[in-house]
Amino acid sequence: MTDVLVPTSAEEAATAFGDGSGITVLAGGTLVVPAIKLGRLRPERTLFLGRAGLGGIESAQGTVKIGATTAIAELVDAAPEPLATFARHVADYEIRGQATIGGNLCAPGGGTTPTGDLQAPLLALGARVRSVGAGGERTDSIDDFLAAGPAGRLVVEIEVDPPKRAAATAVRRPHAHAYSVLGVAAAETANGVRVAVLGAGPRAVRAGSVEQALAGGAAAKDAAAKVLDDVEPQDDALASAWYRRQVLPGLVERALEELR
Amino acid sequence: MRLIVNGIERELTSEPLEPLLHALREELGITSPKAGCQEGGCGGCTVLVDGEPRRACLLPLAAVDGASVTTAEGVGEPGRLSTVQAAFHEQYGIQCGFCTPGFVLATTALLERNPSPTRDEILADLGGHVCRCTGYVKIVAAVEAAARGDVSADALNAGGTGSSRGEPEVVVTGSPA
Image 1: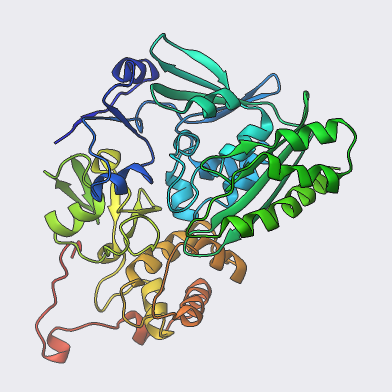
Image 2 (image 1 turned 90 degrees about the horizontal axis):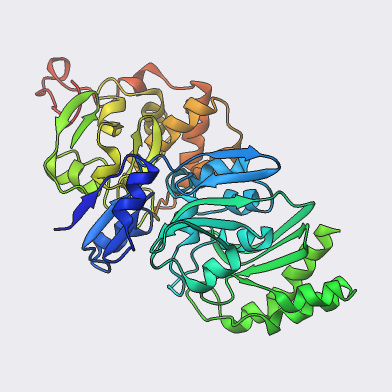
């Protein structure tokens, strides 16, 4: 049997999390509960965040602050693009009402189907991730947060600045869940155009080669072709790596055209 | 853990990480939520939590402590079906019946927030529910009929037993009756 900690404030949650060792974080439950039930995960201690008051979206001085346990359904109407569009296509109506942005950000990659669809738009937006853990509170760029992985960090809040323009393209496979085979998020931010790809590797990645080509004045089609330098597509239950390589440059090109 | 299930306050002794689905089925004997995929992908376990459709297989009890849960047993009863249940019955929206409680609850919530959904809205919002008999044409027809209130008195009274038919009263576990 596992201990279940149920903090009722952000401070209590941070204290209970400590440095995160031996802690399994549970919020919406859509990934963690089946993993426990089916025996893939055996938590020593479980930190349930549903009553910690970490949900909600607020806007101040042009920055949108999204609490870690904000349901994905709430992003559909209230988050800046391309985050809203990606949120609209996560799983299904019931799951979107239950799953959280923090859980999606911390979703483990490399499973039989891609998870963490919101990582791509958060990368494109250049989001900032506020977290607690060993050494206290800190704010990381989304790039650094995803590169290091969520181990030892408890996500508290995600900040995004609405971009000048945004675009989202994706190939989805309809099932009871609409699984994303591939997704491309692009945003024109204060620091130039950022492009991120979902579904071509264990987690979402920046398409740095595409961004550099664009900054150098390349046409959308030529810049988009560079995306294959940035990704390592995988074979999984949804599609082959070969298929992903064939389709991805076209998806990037469409996103860049949409951004104009 | 304390829950209100179909209007009745219940004290549960299952572990806090036990999915609501198993607590309902195994501790309370309420079996309309179905254990299908148990990973959130089939919709068969859908219940209403404080009026919102949720996957009971994905909700730990800790997340629903103090909440009000409605299962198919709580939206109507044999002989006094809800409009949605009657429409599924009358439009043949039920084949094997395994997915039906989930569809009925999701439809009940859908019509609550959007009383006249378009066909596309129905398909989008019920998209998380799988019918392996592939009876979707009739299921969508049932949702549309329920939205119009197009159900007969016979359908609303379906399943009724008791003295009028010379049969014993049916007691449905978990229903408020």
